[in-house]
Length: 405
Image 1 (cartoon, rainbow, N blue to C red):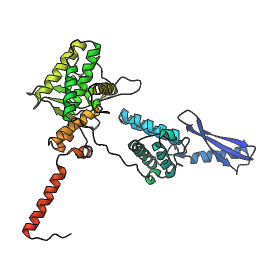
Image 2: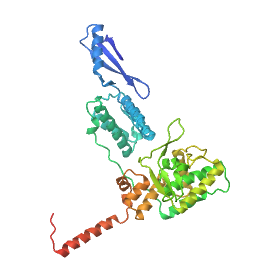
Image 3: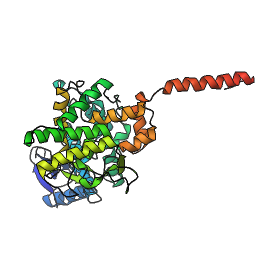
Image 4: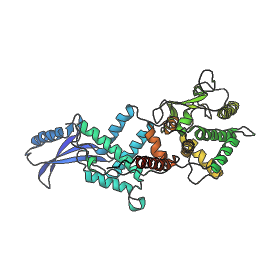
C-alpha cells in the first residue's frame, strides 16, 4: 500500500483505513479516513483498504488529494510551459488563499457553494475576518480556479467543474489617469532637469537613470518592464538603414525571488513592435547615453539601455523611484509610473490618432483592448453619432420614404 494504513478503533469496534493525501500550506499532515465495517480481521481490513485506496486514484493522480496540492501541481505545469513568472507568482498567491480559507478541502468533493462562500470571504474586509480583496482581484482568482477545474475534469481528476455554477465577479473598470497640459509640462521639465546633473556620482546618476526611465514611458507609452528591457541594440537612429529612427520593443524584465532581474524575450501583449522616434527624442536618448557612459563606461550592444551596473534594473525599483519624483513635482495624488503610459495613449487619441495605430504603438493584443481602456477619451464620438443620425433622418424626410421597424 502506498499511503493507506489500517487501525482497529477500539471505542467503535470497527477497522478504519487512513490515507495520507498531502499537507496544508503550513505543513500540517492531512489524512482521509474510511470505515471498513465488513472487515472481521486485519487481513480483510488491509484488502478492503487497498481497494478503497485504488478508488481514490484517477489517471495516476490521487482523486482525493487536497485541492491546494493539486493547484500547485497545475501551477508547476504552467510554469514549465513558459508562463510568465508574474503570472506564476499570482497563481501561487491564489493557491494560498485556498489553503487559508479552504484548508484540507478535497478537490473532488468541493462544491459550488463552498467556492461561492470562498470568494465572498476574499471580498470581506480584513477587519471582519476576510481577505479584503478588490472585486477585480477576486475575478482573477475565479478565472484561475475555473481554468484549473476545467483541466481537472479533462484529466478525469474531477467529475465536474463546480465553478460553472458560481457567479463570476464583475470587473470594475477604472478610467485611465492621464496628466493635463499643466502637469505634463511640469513633469517633463522635472525629468529633463534630472537628466543633466551638474555633478556625476552614484546618487545623481541613479536619479538621472530613474528620470530617463520615466521619460521613456511618457514619450513612447512603454510599460515599465519593457522600458527596463530595452537594450543598446534595440535603439537605432540611422534613418538610412531604417525608414525612421526607432526603438524595437521585444521583451520585458522579470523579477523572481532569489534571482537577479532578467530579460524575457516576449512582451506582455506577446507583440514585438517598433516605436518611431523624432529628432527631440534622439537628442534626449543620446544625451542620457553619454551620461551613462561617463558613469558606467562603454557597454556592449546587448547591455540594457537603462542600467546602473551593466545589468537589468528591477521594474519595481524603477516604479517606486518615480513615486518620489511625482510627489516632489506635485503630480496628482496616486499618479503612478503606469499612468505615464496612460498619458501617452490618451494624448494620442485626443489628438485624433486612430485607435488601431495607438493599439500597435502600445503593444496591445488587439484594438478592442485599447477601446476598452480609453473609450472615455475618444474625441467627439457621441457628437459624431448624433450628427450621423441627424443626417440619416434628414435624408429620409427629404426623400419622403417611410421608416419601419
